[in-house]
Length: 327
Ligand code: PBG
Image 1 (cartoon, rainbow, N blue to C red):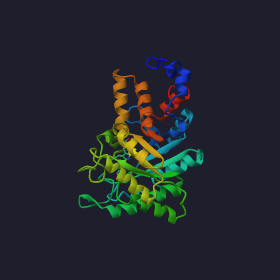
Image 2 (cartoon, rainbow, N blue to C red):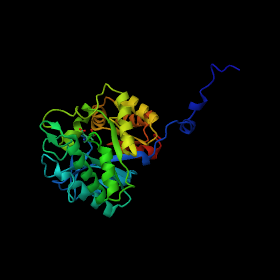
Image 3 (spheres, protein in one colour):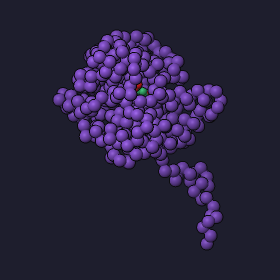
Image 4 (cartoon, helix red, strand yellow):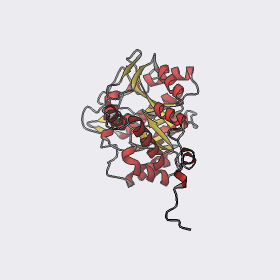
């Protein structure tokens, strides 16, 4: 028997290709980012992110309904407050923009799973992710503010909190604050391996959160480092993280692979704004097939080891999964 020239039996037709796929995608693995703007009525297109919108508190249910119609049952909320100050105090007030959005969503759609991004950069007037002492972020002062913010989200009804600030000790500080108020079962999704990335550019325009001076390299990771990601994940695990994240996704698939193999916690990937914008821009110019590139990028992120994906393409991907184009 000559096995060298055997026919490629497992590639024969669509049915067997689908049977033998190594990577499976599910609409359950998709999380859609929702931007809520306290100063807005209705919804407004985000220039920096073609196809994405800011939603006012009066239209945030529309965002949820669009998700549900597409088969996406989970979202991560980002808030744009009406008022900013050096401490970012709008982040934790009871009637803050995210807190009100959560209440509105939960009242209408209690089963829609709400994750909140916990960070101060959208709420501080200087745009840094923490409270400053001089021109540096004061790590420990910031921890208190982050813990208060996370707690206020959970008290408003959030199902999960996701600290994205990268301060040292934030997962532990948030865990203690939640446990101290009876929220032991609320999970923490830690943005563990979050790189100081130029791929966040469109998000900062969308969230109005670019730092007024300096950059975030003091608290976000250096793209040159792979092993350091494992160290960051290990610290978050030790502090009580329930899920880990690697961000961005496509340029960091090696990190995703590494961390998903090294840790037994569920692994989330964040396909960030710049990754989305590049695919949209190249697609709009006719340089690539936007739909196919979107599908292939998502499949690759799951193949590398992600268990779930935060992506601005969540609704389109859910449709592609439902149609059997991927998954
Ligand atoms: C808040 C935060 C950022 C993103 C998610 N949470 C911006 C940043 O760190 O500068 C980026 C998301 C994206 O680019 O889509 N700190």
